[in-house]
Length: 197
Ligand SMILES: [Fe+2]
Image 1 (cartoon, rainbow, N blue to C red):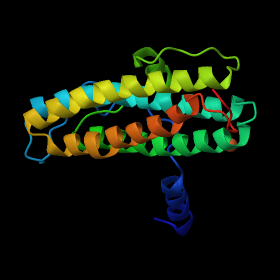
Image 2 (cartoon, rainbow, N blue to C red):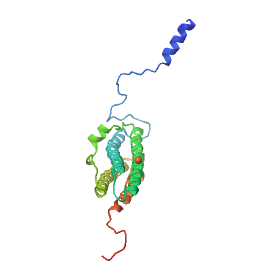
Image 3 (cartoon, rainbow, N blue to C red):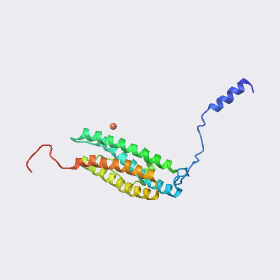
Image 4 (cartoon, protein in one colour):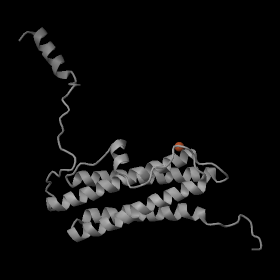
């Protein structure tokens, strides 16, 4: 091979192959067996549950960002910061749930279209809500997540999927319970100054 020819071949090899056929490596809803000493049926059940929880957690995460942007009133600054803190904590849960799905051999949902189709949390309006309405929406969304997460945790424990049970109890349930406390206390009707009742 001449030097010129060799150079051309090298350049061809270094060129990114940018166009590929849209062929899936693994279909959604299937489980690839991994050597983690768990039955495929157990993994499949956990994956299905976790994808529902993922859709609802992604929705709750985005509800926090919506309210972070759209909040108003005398408690603007504190709620603006609190809502963003909870958004970041929910984002960490989203990543932990999705990666648990992948480590069980499943395929996690990822895109907003799929989230919108699957979530059990009611769709909020595009417009702005007053603070008590924002908080009521958040509390309802948390309750949806907590109810399903507890049922899924029990199912995972009974099936022997301790890793999923631990994620649900130690991270999802505890984080959501704490956030409910922080947000819910804003709806207690207490005066800013003492007066006779
Ligand atoms: Fe921000």
